[in-house]
Length: 404
Image (tube, rainbow, N blue to C red; front, side, top):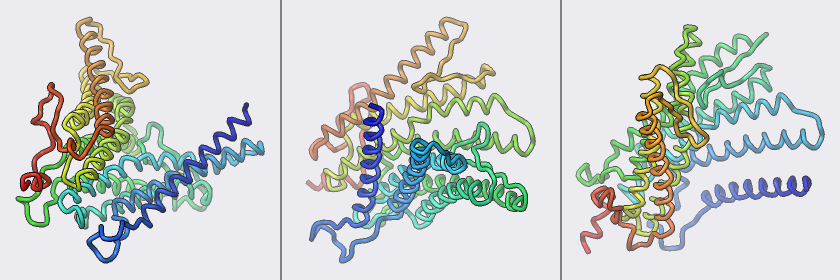
């Protein structure tokens, strides 16, 4: 039985990696049916897609090397301890990749909302895609090179933030250790400045014909930006706390522990954002870039996003008011047990409300994907509790409907 399950494990891994390679290869070599593309030449993958491919490829390569080192240990009994540790540490540097990728794709979709054929984010925003991507890749390469080539150590600082690494080089390479310390902060600076500029570009991009033709930001993009802010805010605060401790020796235990505990809440953000973007892409596909997910699906996006945001705010405000950080259960919801029974019941009610909003909203979005048709992908049909007025904002995408 052990041998059978081991064989099944490797068959599944092979299927996974063959599928990933096939998807990337297919996207790079895709040719539309004759007569459907207005231009004479087919353009290469857009910067948002190219950066997503780079991050995805690096992500899977790193985990493949981790699996290879563990497989070698399993079958030979001899460990590549240094190599395996280097690979495991490098995975921590890749934890930003899913959230960055979905943000890039969302910004690209916002540009296509303006111009379905030639729409691109601003040039400086595309440069920020590459800056975030190459900063992340550089962090990964350093996490591998420092222990394997320079004989130093690379590890996530105690209580450190996602994507951050601490490098130490002794002996003849000690001077290089100082350079790597500076590079560490430069890399984190590039990532945070880069994704902030990408979000700014979503708010400031305009239609090629002028501001009056620029549609409001879609519900999907609003929710993605909200989730992105929550995700990176937590890790930015953790990084700031660690940096202050390293330079001054002073600890802010309440703030640090609060941000550490909030990691469980923002763990939902990347998967929710990917689901929302995929739903909107399905609506645009069915309506020739003019429609939007059903109203109830957009309400589900709001509900899930609000649920995560409420948990985020509860976990942020209560510790500051009580002086002690909250603890979280396995599904990321806060566990708060005040001595006052009324407050206890209020917190239990809030927990279940956010639970219903999170999972109910997610189910609504998934249902919307499977029941979406060209006729109902118009942003209308909200649930009665929320109302039709929260549907997709009216913009240039509705011009064709108005003409009919």
